[in-house]
Image (cartoon, rainbow, N blue to C red):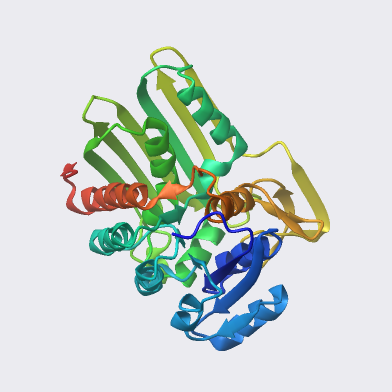
Length: 358
């Protein structure tokens, strides 16, 4: 792995929403002196490339990945297309940041990790929720042993039907559990670190999206028991009204320890905007009269710059690959465990049985 570069090159694979954001943030990062962009739809790659003044634009991922001026790769393709570019980059010893979930199958995730280890390089997975400032502060309290051994975690994840429909249009292969609830799985796993999940029992309910032909549940709840007896209680609802003023996910989390507690109410109702001309939605291409201004949990555009957790996450990874600074970004191994748990939740719902995690 190439570390301690003062000047490095980045390859962006995929020019969708995430690729646009990652590339814009990377372009403004001081150590980035070369950026290559690829997308199988070359017109999209050209639009993004021109926007960020890319040095190389291609419809061929491998052309970007193999370029000698590119030292690290960001994979922002749709979920079914993660494997090939990740493997191509890791085989060349280039560090990779891939969007969550790491893959759609455990076999694919394991292969990525194996290739990264074989080639002495690193694989990280994009989990923006870790980089909300209050969750970072919570992690520090845990590291400082302020709350003691964690006994239980409770998490709630909400979003609107409008955003849910947009996610399913983007990828029919994804579920809300694997796309959204996985954030809380990752957060609690990060907080508990060495604790190992043992079994899962979950229930789900779905009507709204099945009317449009999508086989997904908009409501899900799960109890995960760990080997030491710790209990994690998760629930998810992608059923808020279409015109609910949230610009993104709404999260609540409670962590109960032997010596203290952490409570996070991340509904973001404290900052409200209203306009007769409409407030632009951060995720869906539409306007609403009223908006919870900071409810787009990944961050927001303001004054020609992207601010917030998504930008902090990207820059944290760029610090790591350019300067060797330790980063709290989700590792490939953590991404695999997140996938095992979310797939276990889905399997428990479908089978109506308890699932044992190997």
